Image 1 (cartoon, chains in turn yellow, orange):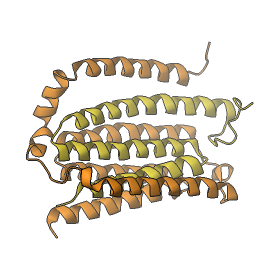
Image 2 (image 1 turned 60 degrees about the vertical axis):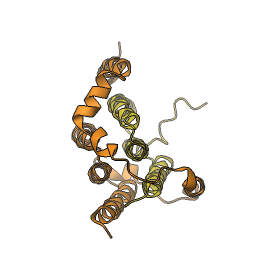
Image 3 (image 1 turned 90 degrees about the vertical axis):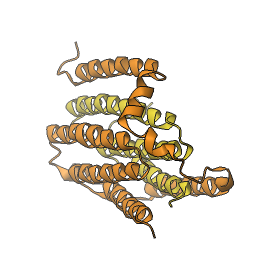
Image 4 (image 1 turned 135 degrees about the horizontal axis):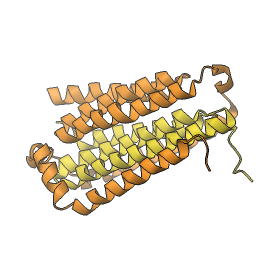
Length: 100
Length: 170
């Protein structure tokens, strides 16, 4: 019998790995993948609570999170392509045209 | 040790390991492949929680659609020049590492602190609510409005992606 704490701790660890990926990596595509990792760790929390509470709402929310993640990936990758076309790089340190 | 416990620890080991490999690989293609492995491990974890429908769409949507999109973009950009993207260890990375470690400690503290308030047992309904039948019923009755709004979101995403990725913005 696995307790819900185990799922929550696993989810926290995965989320933090995603945070480190976003903060430490400079490749825009890997930053995007780290964001997907963070969304997935939150999904795990939602599914765990849904199962342990016997309530379907958590799984519904996971369904909608997946939809938003798909939309986000499509638009985000289009932005990466547009940036690469203009600046020939995906290094987020070189993309600073909005920096004052 | 029951089968459930063994499965949980094996899958969480694969999940954390592939996530760590994902953020440390230099090549984006390797990162994407490790992320796909992570998604499969997560789908297995959903199955241990009796969420069959979520496990299936995890593989179909994430591993099948989103990650193919990622790999396709990596291929399109043709990031052959790895030297341009070389990321060296610098003192700047200590700050995010420290911040993330602090956040992890906080999360673990909260989880262990709230131990007495958390639900501790599986409820028999867990097996039932994960099925496609139950999820579909809830989706088309209680969650009909968010479900319809989702279609508008996807339409906006399609239009946004096409407009952004077009050759000339005019």
